[in-house]
Length: 187
Length: 185
Image (tube, rainbow over all chains, first blue to last red; front, side, top):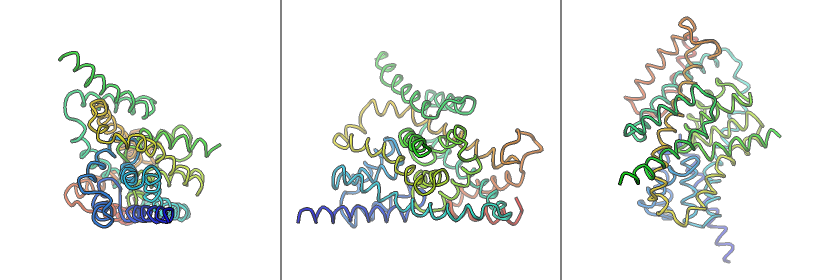
């Protein structure tokens, strides 16, 4: 009996997050309203305040925000197994949809007009990324220190062959040194 | 062997691409350069498709790259490896969740991580711009004559529209594809 209850709960977690993954475009911010409807209102696994907390934490942990949020909610419902099932639920639709598209698209890529269309799309992707950068700028660059970090990081990636992972580690350490050690001495 | 390499690359993305999908793009350019599995132009097409299909951008990108490199199995490996580091972290910190987000050390690290991630995305933008605005898919050097002016103009128009209309990205991508066909870009 207990076992059957657990399985039912896991199925619920998986199907809820599968639905969220299948119905949100772009992940991240776009996911919040869906999560609110499914996890807060319908299933009542968590309340609104917890959802916003998890969402904030998901942004300061490694990995994709969407699967992080899913895992955090899954953990609250059913521990580590719940976290794994929630994350699998949210990524499964992506896997299915993209695999089908990738398999079909490679057939069309050599056609002339498809290539013209893709050239148009490339210009649009550049515009979309620039728009995201402007939004991110407001949350990440606040003073001279963060501006210096930004400029150094851009130079490091563009000019040198340094791995992006290394840059993230070094800049995280710089943040710690400045905020914790540098400020500690002054006070 | 290729699966092992693929797994290692995406574990790295899962661990360091903090903040989501766009942050993983510089890692993909790095991967393209190191392995030769796909080109810069391929990456832009993957971004466009990942933005126009449901699901988180970072996960869509992982599946797409994995599929391109190693078929359906490659897709599974890349997708799972992207989420494994985050699952381990979350299960590890779940017990001390509230203390984690309020922790001074975590906050301090993020004052450095946030601008660095913005910088990584700027570099992704430069890579994309190079392919989109320069002939031969960005292979030729930055020369005035090689600039694809149609691409630059379309970029300017789309940037303006995105900032002012707040429609879903798929709208702009679809419109740009149609314009690309009509004007033989």
